Image 1 (cartoon, rainbow, N blue to C red):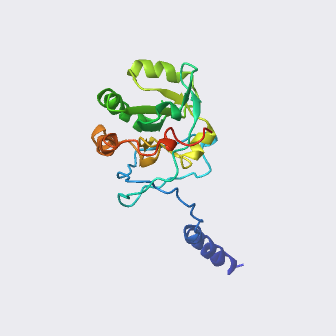
Image 2: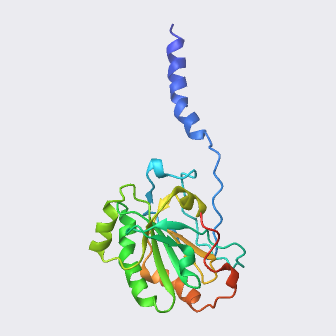
Image 3: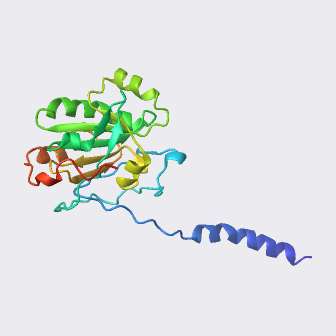
Length: 221
């Protein structure tokens, strides 16, 4: 009996070490397309029952900048807006589209909204469209919030297929910038300022539509 107690204590002493040493298989991260600004830690996880298969989107260790030739257009979609009208990505063919996954309950998302409103006002005539995709479970809260905040760009409600098609979005805000040819050129995670967004939008507004067949994105989900 005298020997058993030290052995038990030794076993319990090693349990934390064993637990910390367990390695979980890492999920392959979605490919980043184009330049990505530094990711921010101020992001909110999606609710558990809305959460895609990929449960974590870790911040990049350093900014990623990549010049690409787009071969695959952004995933198309047809989603209801806050008034019940259907909105498709193809409605904005030939424009630069800033797609923002957000929610009313997400603090970092709300921080971005004033800048998005200003961008829509400033660059609308130059061909920019800001499009918010709400991931709110309580959809009844969204229309009133949109009116109170003076949001001047379209807001649509997500479905799971669209969330997964855009890289299994698991943290919000997550923003995609689609060029005039329907290609995703930038992905940004976390709250970004108007100035940071302008840095990626302005060059795309100066581009022309080069591939007419790709306007409006891929087939709708």
